[in-house]
Image (cartoon, rainbow, N blue to C red; front, top):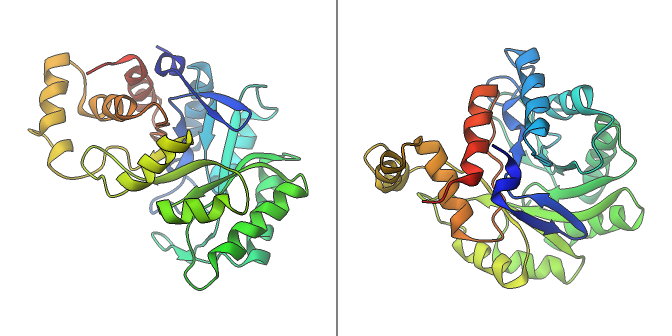
Length: 270
């Protein structure tokens, strides 16, 4: 059982295994505050690395700050092949509360905070977490280009953006990843995925178990899971890996048991 069983993708000049880990769930309820079991969350992070996961996705808004702090606390100094991607652009006022703020100066402040919490001199992949419709998109992306030019980030990624916005961003700075909600039961970002496929850009699906008939008990994936003798979650992850060679799933969990179940899907073919 290894994340390497899923193969690899390339983020600019960085190569990572195609089964990553999303660190949103190592926080409290509503992605707010400290997790219920801090020690278990730290074990999850360590076990992920032991299982060959070398791409961990987080954000300053997870906690806020908690996810990044836990990653540094448990994994720093980081293994040479570990890529930590983080994001900026949301402001939090409480559990379940998410508000866009992608003004250039605030994005720069977010990046500085992530550098400090992660104990890094440069972030490998820094992503615009959302599109703020109160700020010109080019201004938000331009701020990330400035951070890259200053050497504070290595590569730029997008999250929760459209195919058209991907094209616009690429006119400003190189984009190495795109992270959107996507699953077998929720294919609203199909156009964005296809744009990534055409340009060889890794696509990071969040909420990979999704919703809808395809990913419910009795649905198509559940039937495939029963035939294979695997869990529905494993079938959903295997479907994503099989859907596209640029797919980089990042299932999140605060349980070592669930982490191991997810990583085992890396070697599964439906």
